[in-house]
Length: 500
Ligand SMILES: Nc1ncnc2c1ncn2[C@@H]1O[C@H](COP(=O)(O)OP(=O)(O)OP(=O)(O)O)[C@@H](O)[C@H]1O
Ligand SMILES: [Mg+2]
Image: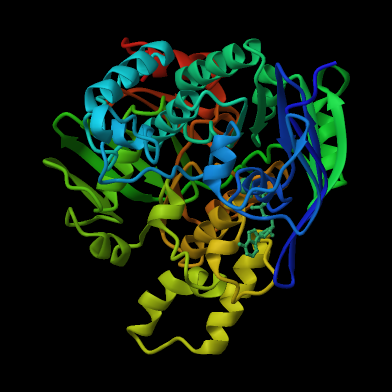
């Protein structure tokens, strides 16, 4: 029998008094795609970072290819054949795509000079193999999360790794991109490499992986063959209780028009976008990644400019290009890329949550430390943010818990109009239905909610009305009662009008 690629047994890691990992245990075989699942904060990324050489374990067995190893740097881990795609892309914005792919290991020609044409050539070969159409010479700055993730994958494949670890690689990818990634993963598996795949999406775990290991509270719970287990069984092992994946929106009294967007146009980005959102209503913007949904949201909130059209809140025109004006008018935007755009990572959890309300309230001299702490505590607990103290630095939270902090920050401002981009991305099953319940409750209190989501069950379960975007235009408006995954997908991928 072949040695497994990776063996971890009872690996532990603490940060001060915080035990991030108690007993990390996993055995990854060659030619296998091994899912690693667990709730937000279960210790998955910590385990990965130990294998990557980013953290050193406090205890436990760590064996690669049958040999005991101890990595004190990521370079050692890379040299041993481990490639990691992290939860947050780690590209250097100023460097070109090609330079990023070869970061730290540029091929050198005669006289030790960096061989640029060899690099270019290699990247072209790689992109062809992976079906990537990104310009290798452009800077990484300004690439969408999806494209950044694709480049991370290219980086890993270029390394010719024997163990490839993907920490929630699909969170920002559209269906086509996910399919492409899975095809690459399967071909690497067929070449006899070992893969670890972390995801909160069970359709992916079951569609791609052959084995699954479940973690809870930093500890190993179970390993099963995918063929021998079920979603329900895994969820029970993850959370130790039964949970519903979806909390359908409760019907509410729909009131007056709160947000009205009329003929909003930004040439080349979106065209002639018109819609209303009423008090108590959740309107979903559905469509594929790249359809222009986030761009519309950012324009409505004033982060990005638009060429023509108007945005009105409760009958008053909101001047374009000014988030401050949008906030004054009662709009809040929870952005898609929350770590970059929404979180002050070096600040405490509590301060992050109250950041936005502090800005509004302190102008009127209304906020006290007591109020601030109460608000922070209330929202942290409503969203089940897993942290040891409200003054823990946000950077030390797990990816999913960081998402919740940014959600909490904007919900705490209690806006009239909430625009929320991918509300449950990176959030585990247990909290997902909690976020859905909260959104439903806020709509029930009269909030108008515009929700962008790439998850069809979420769109179908939560939206009163669905606007489908394709290539910068609204191609269909579908009422809750008529919506099916088929007609939403059809409108997202076909040019013709489906309904109106
Ligand atoms: N550098 C650090 N300092 C302090 N605590 C940390 C640090 N890194 C992780 N933790 C804590 O360890 C626990 C496990 O975090 P980890 O990131 O491994 O979770 P995860 O399973 O990847 O969760 P998610 O699904 O949300 O990404 C969390 O409670 C987190 O706050
Ligand atoms: Mg993680």
